[in-house]
Image (cartoon, rainbow, N blue to C red):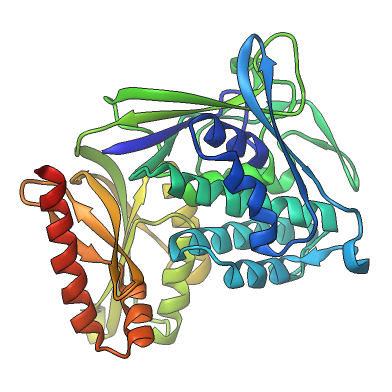
Amino acid sequence: MRIAILDPAAGISGDMTLGALLALGVPASWLEALPARLGVGDVAVTVRDVRRSGITCKQIDFKIPEHPDGRHGRHVGELVKLVERAPVSDWVKDRAVRAFRLIGEAEGRVHGVAAEKVHLHEVGAVDAVLDIVGGIEGFEKLGVAAIYHLPVAVGKGWVDAAHGRLPVPAPATALLLEGLEVASGASSPVEGEATTPTGAALLRVLSAGAPPERWRMMGNGWGAGQRDPKHYPNALRIVLAESAGEVARVVMLATDVDDMSPEYVEPLRQALVDAGALDVQTWAVQMKKGRQGFRVEVMAPEAVADAVAAELFRHSTTAGVRRWVAERTTLPRHQLTVRVEGVAVRVKVLDGGTPRVKPEYDDVLAAAQALGRPPLDVARAVERDAVALIAKAKE
């Protein structure tokens, strides 16, 4: 199974992530075409090789007009709608929308405004769209089955912001990092702001937590930050690796509720998924004094278990959450694309023994609508063609 491991020993930002992805072989032409694809205006993209502590890195710069079309900024709600209209896959779109919602919630909690009303000036808004959508789609193009990360350097000292000087990590960044393992103070040589809100949001929506104990290194890509300090490489490393299907540690969280309307289960489920939950299940239970209730059971990576538990308290009426560590065995998996009468449908392939295939449900529905065929017929055709492709590849 092909995996990616982010090593933010010097922090992480959107441009550092993009640089590391290009250093691993994602085409620069894709990034140069991204602003026009997303409809964010006349943005010039510069990709160049630089050195950080003697290491060759890719550095990304976006030249963004200050006030295109008279705009002076955008709200997070506008950016979410822009991403929802973007010509990207559902996998990219779902994570990009979640990243902007996380940023909006963090900034909103700091400044006391609704998440969708958080305002970003135009240059920052466009830069965030390119960093987040580009960072997520870049991993899709890299073709990895899973993404992990090592402890995150947050830096130390102070950072200049619109409202004055703030301690590192800045308040919104600190909220976005909740539940993630960080490296700071004496354990890190990094001065100033090492991790940006965009970088923290990318970690939250992409990473499954700590990497497996054993893997085979296949490549390294370095993405440069803007500063060039003398004592450490200000760059993000992304490691490309191969990992067999294996046992991973996860945290299970559960609670029973009998005083909340079932109507609020769906927003609870969405909040848990947004916080990084791998799976959310609910079912009916009978509680004391014969009361009918329901149980919520959540599986989460260890790195975000605390953040997921916090969302359980925020979005339900529970007064307590049970938690225990479990082992999760997964098969290696990858993704391929099958065309049915010219319409593309993505297929997940599990590689244990005889390959098992599962078409992406949303792609099947879209293809069925485009072709005027029942979804079940489309799914069967996709499964048949996917199995044939896999067999041909093994010849």
